[in-house]
Length: 139
Length: 139
Image (spheres, each protein chain N blue to C red):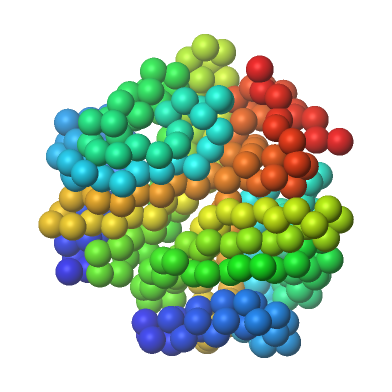
């Protein structure tokens, strides 16, 4: 059981890192429950998505705005059908050429080798500042 | 090994939820490596801390500004010396009486039953908006 989940995690992140979206699609359940936590007015691919098609559209949205520069999983915790992954990532913003980098925290659940639940966290305040290329006034 | 880590996780979150900071201190390693990802200009208890004393000061900083209303662990993934915990939490801001609520993602590592590594993620952009009580302009 652990092995199967770990294999699915490895496959999913490897496929995403090499931009093999057909393979990514293979591993995503048709009815996946998916949330990337972040402001949609800055990151239109963030928010809740239901189902493989909607998730692939969100991933295409990321690829439309950003070129993947680095996606390195640093911590992988697996237990039964669940996994948690912390990664160090960098993307180049296509519109400006600037690189944005962050740590990502993912919680995943698999059923029959397919991703059925996904939650992504980042320090979204910091990411928004990087994406805008300016500090946000909070005073 | 798994049991020991799970026991430590349960103890830590139970102690924190019941505001038993002496017990929390017991479970934190003297040399813990600790990061809460978020903007320090809004959340002065965020950022990197090294060592139990500095971490307890950060926790006291949270308690100084916020009253804990809810801390419910929803997902706990344990493997060997590591754990990942996703929680649903709410705090009342002492200065305004407003409640802020969020999902938290924690990555933890234990050694000899003590927390030696801690990383906390939240949708910090959303949390800043809740703490300020206004939308942030990003246009």
